[in-house]
Image (cartoon, rainbow, N blue to C red; front, side):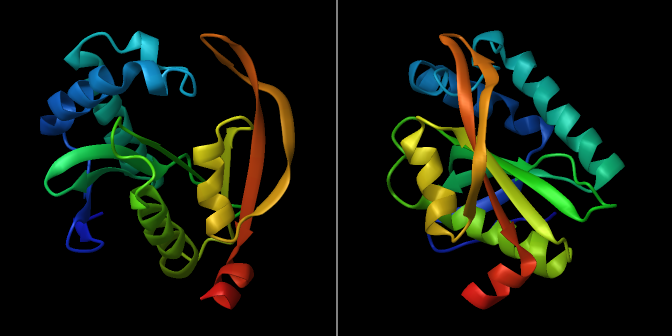
Length: 182
């Protein structure tokens, strides 16, 4: 993937090794807020952990076509968004994202998700995009709801987080539905 300008404030850039310090700094500033929803946060204790994440994302992209991007707001890293493993046989992909402290509630991630959904369904010609989030993570759930995703169900105790297990809301959107919304 290439740099993608969303608007005058927002840009998506594929994650590169030189972004490790930016990711680590954002995790550090946002740790208390994001750890309640993301199981990996407590394991990120040094910049090399962010570098390993980026290297794994690049490897996955090379092997599978998936990619992970930084969401940059006015030149500062605000969050991360990307495709999970693409299921090419079933033409399906999961979309994951997180925002750092101070960037929530401004529509940034909704705009970024719209770009990646559009790319997956129209450019990559995938059939389905799925987003899963903790049922109590109201901010994260608002994004697929705004974009017209359908709540398909809840997976009980789907993920273990520092404070215990959480249920996941599973949202799906089909290419035919996205074309109708467009």
